[in-house]
Image (cartoon, rainbow, N blue to C red):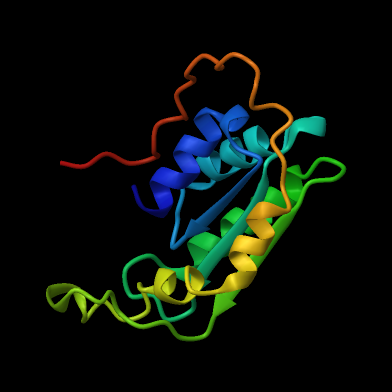
Length: 146
């Protein structure tokens, strides 16, 4: 799913989650950043967010995490919680053909950190018992491939 998928799914169905941890994630432009942040920071039912990224990520620039954290802070409702862990260095992925992707293995550090699991377990999902929300598409990216 990756970090982008985590942002997208959490924004599409925020009633599924009390908290979400996103590693090396990105949004497709500032419009999508703002929309994801708005959906996650809704009133008393906001979703707690923990963001992990490495400054030396050679795949997804750390500015993507910086931008999402900034958008979350701007949209924050009273009681919203955003935690940002910004590593100076992370390894490449442990799979040999991807090992040259220096900095993109932040999950290797994040998922070994007991503090992540302690943080996740502190959150309770009071909104999760409600019916699913309709799927609302995020705005399209400001560019096209082709």
